[in-house]
Image 1: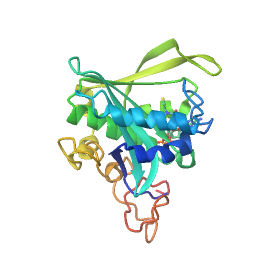
Image 2: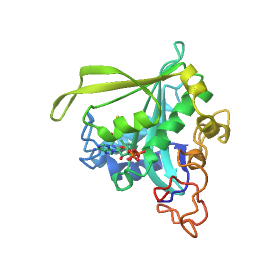
Image 3: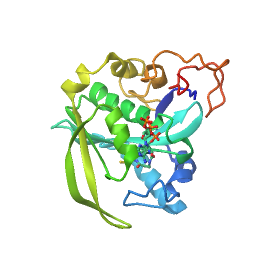
Length: 235
Ligand SMILES: CC(C)(COP(=O)(O)OP(=O)(O)OC[C@H]1O[C@@H](n2cnc3c(N)ncnc32)[C@H](O)[C@@H]1OP(=O)(O)O)[C@@H](O)C(=O)NCCC(=O)NCCS
């Protein structure tokens, strides 16, 4: 596999159709208290996400994830407390692209945004215990499993439980250099558009240096040649 870098961008209302392409699918919201969305529900969600950026100080930083020009998912950094420097992350990827490392790259970018730009002390994430893909993403991000919380949300098939993971700032600073690279290449301080912590993460993915197994390397999502930096499964 070969992918252009995953970049995060401040969500704008015009993204709603892309968002709806996954928010309307039962598989995507299987473990969530929302969905499958109608178009109106997706528009309301995106409108609220856009408005949340205007709050001061901001609490919900909702991003659209792109590979090249293709919208492939979303990621949110939720600043739960500015004074206590507590945050949370969540992410979603279009199902046609699951299993290609995009969810992990979105998560890594959100952690970098939270620690390196917003100066948070602790960032947590939760997932339904049945959501093996999300639990795997959190493990690949190096987040620490903290425990099992019962009946945290009422969803379509009843009360769901949650696995709780977190990373604290010392762990983030001590992590391998590749994590810090992600934000070093992004704009700083926060700018509209391409957001900090959202740099060319493919270049710092666990896959290592640019992939040379395809000639020329063509991104499977955006069709561009020559990026050669995506995580490669042919190694
Ligand atoms: C969770 C989600 C974001 C993962 O996105 P993704 O792009 O597929 O994530 P990645 O490719 O980076 O990693 C997924 C990992 O989970 C693994 N995985 C996926 N389904 C799995 C399953 N049923 N059992 C075990 N592992 C599974 C993949 O093999 C991969 O691990 P690997 O790299 O070691 O092979 C995506 O499935 C999604 O959008 N789900 C719906 C929304 C959601 O649940 N969001 C999270 C809210 S807590």
